Amino acid sequence: MDLASAPYLLEWAALLLRWLHLIVGIAWIGASFYFVWLDNHLVAPAAADLRAKGVSGELWAVHGGGFYNPQKYMVAPPDLPKQLHWFYWESYWTWISGFALFVTLYLANAKTYLIDARVHVWSEPAAIATALAFLAAGWLVYDQICRRLGHKPDGSIGNDGRVLGLIAVFVAAATWSACQLFAGRAAFLIIGAMLATMMSANVLVWIIPGQKQVIADMRAGRAVNPVYGQRGKQRSVHNTFFTLPVLIAMLSNHYGMLYSHAQNWLVLIALMAVGVLVRSYFVKRHKGVNAWGLVAGALALLAGLIVWMAPAQAPLVAQAAPRFAEVQAVIAQRCVMCHNADLAQKGVQLHTPALITQNAPLIHQQAVLQKLMPLNNATAITEAERALLGRWFEAGASPQ
Image (cartoon, rainbow, N blue to C red; front, top):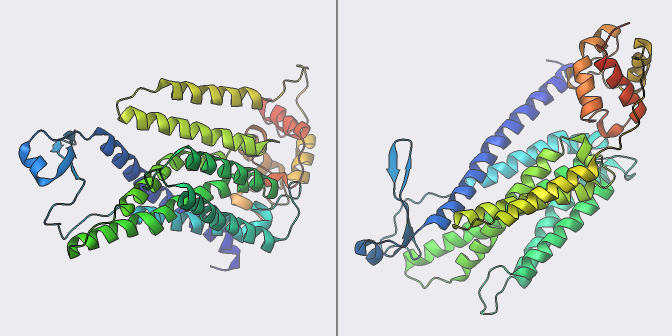
């Protein structure tokens, strides 16, 4: 393969990295959801022998034709098993694959994906450095909030309104800042990546090292410092509530109507708030509490968002289907520079009438319905031009 094959190979790299990212992400989120569910369904054991062994909670479950009896020890049994199953590679590989995808798609194409001159004019190196700074600074600020304010009156480590409230304010401020600096789609992705970095760093820096220290102390016969368990629990709770905001930040950057909105920062904050409400409902539901108010709040917030973002309805005026020459003129001015015989982004070519009609459904989907193309509206297509393309497609996409 020669240099002309580079875009083709990059598409494969993006596909495989995205696939890996989804696989390990599902494994990580699934493990997180399962252990939160497990903790909230454990009951004190009735059997005296289990209590004597130090079992603080157990449950019975059935799945796949088998019966399972998980048991939780608040203090490890006297003979700690040599083989322990850890849950951390899912977290690490989710971040590694996601960062590799971020580098491949966004940082390597900063001029196209990170920079929107209508939002902020700056150089590619500056945009790249700032995007990376969001990931690093996000973790550093968040970690300091937890370290400095995450102490309860009794001296233990945990969560209270100050910690959670300040984290929410920080994430909201970071969202606003990203949307003032980067192209909308990139801003949404960067905030999702920042939260994901905070989650994975919690596992890498605090949760797993704390667990390893506790095990080392137990095996050495030393007294176990309760701070490791307290801090691990604190960060695990945060990770639980970060999960759905991360997912919606990653998903929403595929929908132009969201990230291209004039107040896109507020759109993303609202969507992440819905994620927190939904996750809070499930956490409470696992504890046996039907907090339907949280569901009602999430639905009300979504409904308000949908109504607020709805495009203004112009008076209906009968308009004849545009001539193909008009359509071709719009595509030549707004699309062909990236979709031609020499440069066919995503394998799409639009430089001939036959190719335009062949790709009519894709043009309608990407440029009219989702407004994803042109990317970051780099060629300044107007709403009137999008509407013209829409009328042409709805009239049958005639090549005449």
